[in-house]
Length: 207
Image 1 (cartoon, rainbow, N blue to C red):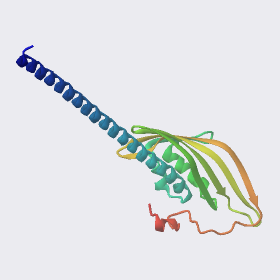
Image 2 (cartoon, rainbow, N blue to C red):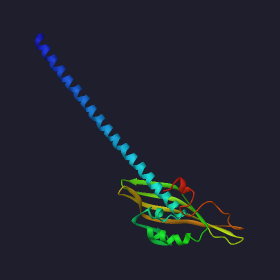
Image 3 (tube, helix red, strand yellow):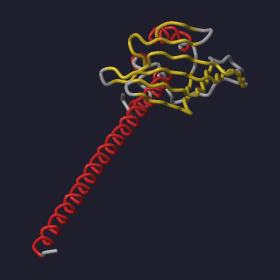
Image 4 (spheres, helix red, strand yellow):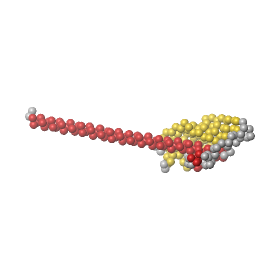
């Protein structure tokens, strides 16, 4: 083969090889960009989910504080205005209506303490569901030589939605698991807790 012809063939092969390498490099770059984009989307989704769970968890705790400090506005705010509540066998109606219903049942008590724990939350965009375990201690006004505390163990199965940037309950179903009563001799000892905004906690956390 003539040298000039061989040289032309080698140049053509070189061009083809360069094209293949450039194409492979471009494909790798595109795949890398797509992978980075997918990673960014996944990270943002995870971050949004964590933020949502934290907001929902805080609302769950707001409910306990609202009841124990007899802070009606705080308790109302846990539900959306059209949110509903079903305390099985006890109450069926709006969330705000439940707050109004339970208020006169708490007012005669000396004190009450609600703890909410074992909170499981599943978020799907702007909606979510949760289950929480509830422990409520309700201390009755004592007689001269007897004090009674009713202990209620229950769970909240809640449906949530995010509207105008705020997570709140659409539907709550409260399920009672069991109740017990503790009795003690003598009157209840005085405590520092207050069932209004004069409670010492509002000095540090006035929300």
